[in-house]
Amino acid sequence: MEAGTAFETERGISSVQVSHGHALVVVTGIEEAALGARRLDAVRLLAEAEISIDFLKLSLDGFSLVVPQDKGTAVRDLLCDAGFDARVLTDRAILTVNAVNIRDEAGMVARIAQTVVQAGAAIESLGDMHSSVLLVVDSESAECAADGLKKLIMNGGGA
Amino acid sequence: MRVRVLKFGGTSVATPESRILAARKVIAVKELGISPVVVVSAIGRKGSPYATDTLLGLLRDVDPMILPDAREVDLMLCCGEIMSTCIFAQTLKSLGHQASAMTGGQAGLVTDTNHGDARILYVKPDDVLRVLKSGRIPVVCGFQGRSDPQPDAVYGEITTLGRGGSDTTASALGAALGAESVEIYTDVDGVKTSDPEMVPEAPTLRKMTYEEIAEIAHQGAKVVHPRAAEIAMKFGIPLWIKSTFSDEPGTEVVPKEAFPERRVTGVTHTGKLVYLQFDTPFGADKAVLEAKVYELMADYEVNLFMLNSHPNSFGFAVPRKQLSKVQGILDGLVVPMIQDADPRTYIVQIGRRGSEEVQAQAKMLSKTNAFGNIRFVVALLIENCTMVSVIAHEYLQQPGIYRRVLECLERENIQPLQTSDSLYAMSILISESDCARAVRAFHDEFELLQAV
Image 1: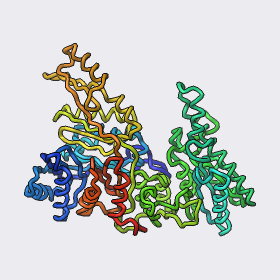
Image 2: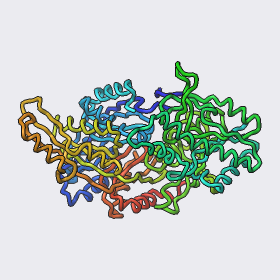
Image 3: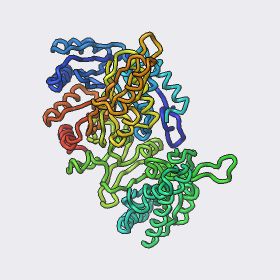
Image 4: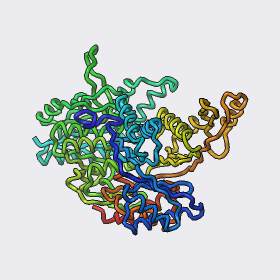
């Protein structure tokens, strides 16, 4: 049950969920001149293999993405076979931090990120939508991060 | 009694001509045998003599060095809607229909005491019903309510509801009155698949889910505020977005169950952004630096977009209008790590060339050994960015969506600077100069001309 009145959900963070069973695939070492083309090669390859990807993030020499844990190794192998320098980090979790109208709450995303990092979790990716912020962290520190966020809820939800 | 709530925004009540058009919408409802309840915003938009921002400016201009109390700000802001209701009620009377102007408090909207951003606790619409039963049309101030009296007070305080306040008033009144629908009138025909300035042929969506409307607002297309959609969804009140200036049917906002198909809804773009990429050391120092930067961004209420983190870097976009604030906070920021055997201190530098602030900090710190080794964390700036988002419902999780998006950008020779995705949207950070081309390309790629 979300905190709030009969009419409106309370401002700030209202709840946190942890979903385990994800893998982060990290590709590095792409030359700057070839970055755009090689990223496109990679997403084409994965599309042809019918693999759905989430949290694609671009870095200065590559990219990272999240897939279900059971597909992590296959994705890495697929990319390595195509000449990418890819590695897979298994046991990743997605933290779903529910908070309404995040764009209206200046500083809220930063407060969530601060809380997660201070709890000892390295944020590997972040996405947001109207009702929540999604963070990819390693499974081992996910519960600590969730506890930190729950304390933030008890102190007013960061709003 | 059949009740319909009609809410008119600032442009709909800005001129005598627009008020007549709005009033005719109200009268048409009454002539159908349905009791209309009207909610109005302040007259006109930013810059207009009675608009919310103008009233706030009057108060602040008394002495820019002294911040007015939130309580007085709320009292001042409420004047705009009060004037608007009186004028609108008078307009209805001039067209032969009795009407009564009411403040939010008189209409029974009771809020918490959070001035400037109050939440509605409950609605007691007895006086609205009394007005309706007398045959008059209630014209209620949007954006405001009243709090319950504090233990040591006789009366409650006037409060304002913050962003989306008038839409929220309309939905809350609709819920409390058991209205058959809530109609939000604006200056567009409903929710378009894209910004008509970039895609002139963008069609109006006939139906959208509450979640889609909330996401499209989150990603930059503010047609109706998600707070209003949330209340309508919670109470099962049909919500419509229509134009005061046309007879087009508009957009109906429906529950997800009523429209379960997987689909792409629209393409939005979100303002002017600047991307900051911090090159950091690996390991524990990075976590300390990252947490410090986020803490300051939160304390100073900076909105972060497109946040990402890698083992030796992290980055995010900020609104361009907040860049000078961000530079003021972070440029020259000193983060000491002097507790272990290898004492060191980081100085954050915004941009490739260190500012005088950064150089002064480095010079000062290097005069003493207390801060150990001085190191710099350079944040590269990518200016003139914008975020283009494809809004979709249960669509983006399909294999191949990223391929379509990146191929589309490649065809247009547009470089993606960063990406972000969620259950409802995929966003791409690009150069602002490419925005219109990207919006049109995505609109074509996802065949949004056929959207309904």
